[in-house]
Length: 265
Length: 178
Image 1: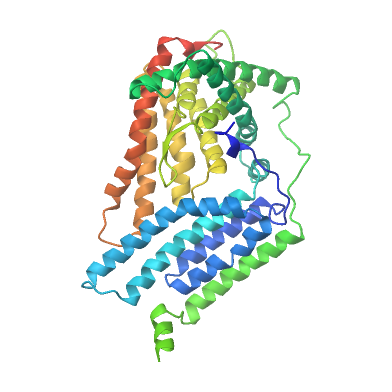
Image 2: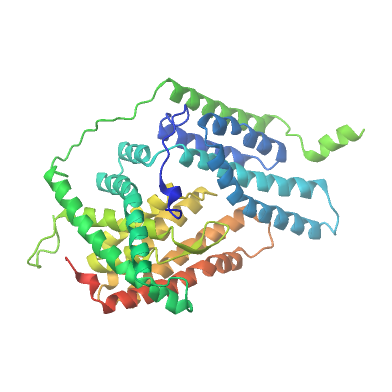
């Protein structure tokens, strides 16, 4: 089961996980708006750093580092391209303006990845489905989403079993040219598709026996309600937005070159 | 309730939903079997789009687009790559939703596969243009980069999917338990 280990959702209890997904989503969107407001390096660095406590509080450091590692490649591409272009445009001179702009773009990107990865790392699919339902997304869609996520490990295990069984019968997956290799997947795909259809028939029976979709107005056992901590995050978010707009409009944002000059003298 | 009243057997909505659920789950499971992956989250997988296209060919465009949109959301929840709100919209619900367009060509599976995957390619392509345009400086041609980047994994997937659908169609597995 090496291939599908990442599939299993680890239930982690933390203050961040217990927050309302809608509030967390608003937070991620506001962070995005704030990041777009600035094109200087320092506020973007601040924005990046203030999110780190969330990661530590949520105890998803390892997963978060993995997603940042994934983003690092693109971040370096963004940095290199931006820097190279302004390097050439300014007549082959390394300027602070160029360096700052390249760094700022890189960090704007990292902030975006960070905020949304916090949202998705700390929101279980069940919560996400519930939140979608309560924001009036059609129920069929939410149901299909939540149930499909639940079924993925089951089908992944089945895929693994079928692969092992076919290998035991002499199927060689890693042999031959491109077309040959694809054709090797057919003996795995056909049993999988047939069993997926069988499973869907069973699922349909189970659903009908529980009178799925009979009543038009559904009620939920679990309902999302805003608690104290949700209001705290909401307040933090709003304060952040207001502060960012205020700084943007009325305060001069220090640039890297100015700070360097200050220390140089 | 069901439009297909001309057919003798009326398929219940429950069965359709159940089929969508198991095929989305199957597609997600298959998307973990990677042939190789790219740094930005694109990857060439062992036919992860086949179940969705297959469902679209089996049940028509409406079910296909629905299943594809659910698949997009599942992909977003399982392995999110978020750089820009417009990019999210284009890369997940719209790009995968385009796969469901294959359902318009139920009698011509090859055309269907092509329409679905090219639709996905176009959505990823536009999203790539927006992404590169918002982070890269002026003077670059975002369209070329986007085309190269997205083409890099869509084209092998296209080839794999067409070939698999072709092989599956020979076995007449498309219409079982209809």
